[in-house]
Image (cartoon, helix red, strand yellow):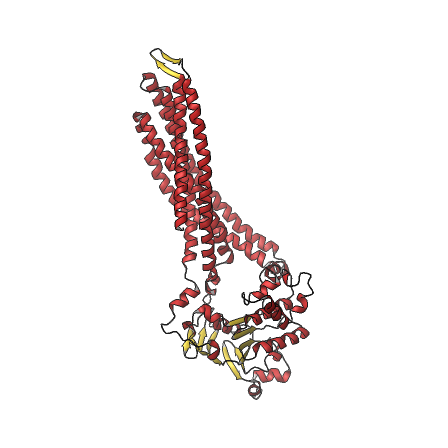
Length: 585
């Protein structure tokens, strides 16, 4: 919370104190009104001859309502502004932290659970700081003010009343801690429920393709039933506690009325004073009861804050990378150095017992093209992930010249790369925005030129809205080939030093592939390129070809070298005119 907002929050709390004070004066004015109408005489109660007190009290009521209205409006306005500023900061910090995490983080945390932090937890924090904290402070102030007035009204009755407060407060504190734990568990179940919804909606094509609507419904229903059961259980505990408070409060009030009426009969207290005392007692009692409810809500919010801050405080990739930078960081460009894999082994954190790469060694020379072929699961895409430093090797080393890649600051290091993946995911904006993603500082002319070089302008211009055509969620409104050409245009706009093509032409027909291959050849010229390919046409001209199998390089060399290997896999593919995917399948 900024210094300005802290002062505003303090000012809002002052206005809250004023409205709380005005509320406490309400019973006092009611008591004064009754004492103005009824007076004690030795024979009992008789009507007072002078009712001028009624007019005076009526004016005080008007002043009281005006103060309440004005300062309540000011307090709410200030609290809303401070809360919105604070939650905006939380949302931004949370989003920056989440997007800054490694891929390992996303492998360990479900998307729906992460989204729940943004929705359910932030909403809980927002509601609490807008309403619950204000009400909690208000109840405390009313309780304190009411107790002061109660003691000034009747010290004798006040001591009777105070006997019932300590045990209630102690029970509320212990119960609040228990409710916090239960509420945290319910919110975790809610997050899991949200995950199922998110996964089903984002993968709706697969759901329908396999006619698994009922399967997903049953999966959701099972979790929703569990959520219902736990929520009801939490409701029972809250209801039990509220009932306990109500019984204690009303029991105490009835007992105090009985004691007070005895004092009225004895003539030691006026009826207006007793009425004032009972209203103040009711105010204090309801404040304590309200405090219990607000306390439960605040405990729930503390759990939400804890989860959000845990995510915000988790160091991101860039921060961890900065900690590893040496004092004398190399200043050479990536383009001027070889990228060298030396006996690299790797296993994914989720499957540490399975080595995907088993001692890979090769060098990417500046300006050269390296093609990687092999069956599914051989480690082709894993090499691309390690080049990007999405993960670090289990053993071995990746270096830029003589310098480990970890000694390059990650954001700068990755800014030299561009990726055209096999499965293109577009963002739900326009075609223009998706191409611009490759270089947000590019001009409109540069975006259109990149689309032209990727042969994407042909289908873009056929749309009524052209570059402003919305692509839909994950690009669902475009065909696979169209999405791939937009991804290639994005890479062209990036103008990287190192280009990674992960089967970038796999979704194109022969005519489109021929056009796009021309664009890719132009893009790869004088640029370090890694081509993970499933067609011989994209492999032949590579400076180096690596054949992978079971995480190992079993053949390595250029086209001319490999076709000379007797009984070689690559030679067999060329001789039979078989594409890599056909051979390995």
